[in-house]
Structures are given as structure tokens and as C-alpha cells.
Image (cartoon, rainbow, N blue to C red; front, side):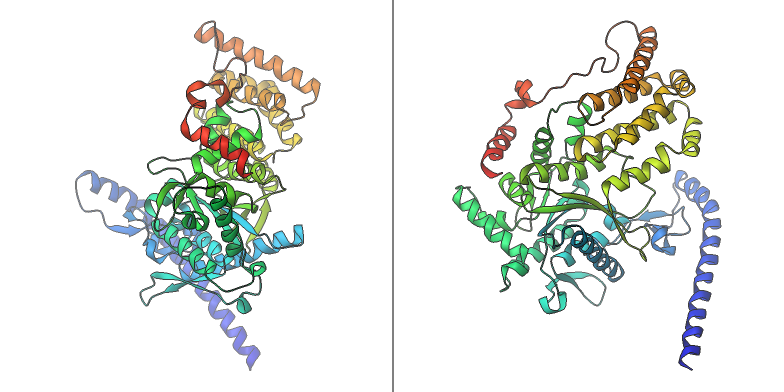
Length: 503
């Protein structure tokens, strides 16, 4: 009888799944007419019905049909109970991954936290961060999160893991409750009477406090010692590393690390929302063992924007440079919430390279867009180079195949020159720069052919725009030491001093 009931329940769940699929198909069909209707109605100054935003891949049928004047989310309900379950699962997978690799728990996890976590994933990574510290949300009867409470160590079954969170400017501006919850979690965890070997948050807080006092740092050192959320200054956006990489304005990993620290050194707590605290950031960077950013959908990829390598790769490089230890860089893949995975970024780079940059079908589809398609090739290869510059996660074979596919193939080079020779120049120049910097151990014969092709591309550009430097011409490398205005900025000088004192 029990077995029959189990089969019956399975059949019920399957029937419900089919109903949802049929409902989704019908709502997608309705979306076509709704899009036209909503657009035209809006142009006429009519009322466009509101509707929720979100990701259909997270099962949000309520976002259909589209064509409505969508609103985002209620931030106070992040993380949702469902997102909490996924966050717990992803945190466990991350810890299992590190335990398998290193044979111990990480003392601190670096987290790159973007607003997509709220607007597309209902707070899954926020939940992951909270659970790593060993706290859980407290929801009220209306579904809003009113705070957090520590999970007893007996229930947790492991140490409380410290976190260092680099939020984006959009999180800072639209999701202050994220900052408040993490800050509340830190405050409650450091106040617990627990052994330091079971509470890395408190352990690092006490170490930070002692170091800040010893260095004579001015201000609220207790607040600085507890700060775990950092970002760019109020009103600014980005992590800065992309500007240095794309302008070839760096010589060493330390140069890029200092840029990331300069841009990221503002602490965000409930009491101090955007106060300069580079000392606190650098002290916390020393503890980081692994750096993560969640990947919830393949609608985006790590080559789609310079921010991916600037925030994530920049974070990893800064932690590695400051601590001097072997830091890991991963992505927690929650695309399939029933099968959460943790991947090393080297594997993630190769996954996207094979799916897009070296995929003949994808290349063919991009070529249909002419000038714009060539620009897409150039952008993604530039961002691939950015990942190599910041995280050293691009293997030789990847650069080899990119060079052969996009520059050394006569037909592809001819297509570039006909549609967008500037994009071809950028791709060839970045490949040569990667070789010059030692990021790509190119074979001499292949590199010679690449330089020859680069000369041909520059020749075509000179015919079009006249003689002189084209794009970058030769590759010139410079840093803050070479530019007085840059070198003499107060923040730059302060980072230089702290670099010597706090590493």
C-alpha cells in the first residue's frame, strides 16, 4: 500500500509538471500579442498593465505574459525561503569542494555579489553568504526578512566561515538591506562565546582589531574590524581593473591588485555606508582562501562584459597578491537548482570558449551581423585576455586556437577586413600583448605568422585613415609610476604605504 501511494504521488507530481508546461506554452504564445499591444498602448499614453520581473528559468510563470510594465522585486523578502534552500545547498557544495581540494575548511570566502542575485535568483547568493557564517534569516508572517539568527554549532556541524563581500554599485544603491543583513550577521557572530577555531569570523575580527590598534588607525576601529562588505565609493561604479587592463596600464600582478583595492576600499555597514577603509579591506584580504561568484543563467557569460574579470578576477588577484598564498577562484553554478556545481574558473573559461568563441555555429551566426558581429568577437576575446591578466586561467591551447581561428585563417581575416578591420587589429594586438607579457607561451612560428598578419591589418587601416598610429599601434605599457597626476593622488599614495605595512 505504501509503495502504491508513492507511485500515485509521483504520478500527481508528473501531471502537475505537464500542466505547468502547457500553461507556460500558452502564456509564451500570448506574450507575442501582449508585447505589441503594450508597446502601442504605451506610445498612445494609455495604461500598460503592471507585472513582475524575474527569470523564467527559476520557474517564475508569473512573469508571463510579457508586454507588461514590469516591476522588480520586494528587496525585503530576499532571500526567499526557496532561495534559502538553494543557498544552503550551494554553500555546502562550495565547502565540500574546498575540503576535497585542500583537506580543510576555508577560513574566509571571497564573494562577488551583484544585483542579479536579487532580481533573477531571489537572493540565493545572499543566502549562501549567510549560511557560510552560520546564520539564517528570520521571516515574518508576510514573508519579509526581519533579521538573522545564529545557527547553533551543534546543528551547523562545522566552523563558521568568514566572508569578504565585494558588492556592486547597483547592490549598494538598490539593495541596502543586503548590506544590513550581512552586517547584522557579522555583529551577532562575533558576539558569540565560541572557540575561535569554530568561529573564523570572530577570530579574524579580533586579529583585525588588534592590528588596527597597533597601527594607530584613526576612527572607529571596532567598526572597521567587523566590516565585511566593501565596494567603490558612493556615486561611482566598477572595480577599475578593466580600465588598467584595457589601457595596458600595468606591469605586474601587484599593479592590478592595487587598482582593485583602491576602487574597492569603501566599507558598507549599517552605521558607515561608504566610508574609506583600505586598512580593513587589506586585512581581510589576507584571510581569503577562495573567491566565488554565483552563475545562475547562461543568458550571460564571463566574456560578456569587462566587469566579470574586473570584479571577480581582480578580487582573486588582490587576495593572492596581499596574502602571498595559493587562493582558489571558482564559480558556483546554480543554473540547475537540482544539481548545483562548483567549477574552477579555468574550467569555466574553457566551457565558454568551446560553447562560443571556438564553436563554428556560433561564429557563423555572429558573422551574419557584419560590423557588429566582428565587434562581438573582439569584445569577447578582449575579456578572455582580461581573465588571463587577472587570474591566469587561460591555457596555451585556448590562445593558440583563438589566433588560428580569428587571425591566421585567411578567410576569416578577409571577412574581418571587409566588415570591421578595427576589430581585427584589436584581436591581433591583444594576442601579441598576451605573448609579450608571458600570459601566452606562443610557439615562435605561430607568433611570427601572427605578427605578419597584424602588419597586413595595420596596412589596411593606414590606407583607410591615413598614416600614423592606428588604434594602439605598438603596445606601450605604463603604470601610476609613469603618470604624475595618477601617482600623486592621495588614495594611490595611501594604498602604496599600506601595501608595505599590512601585507
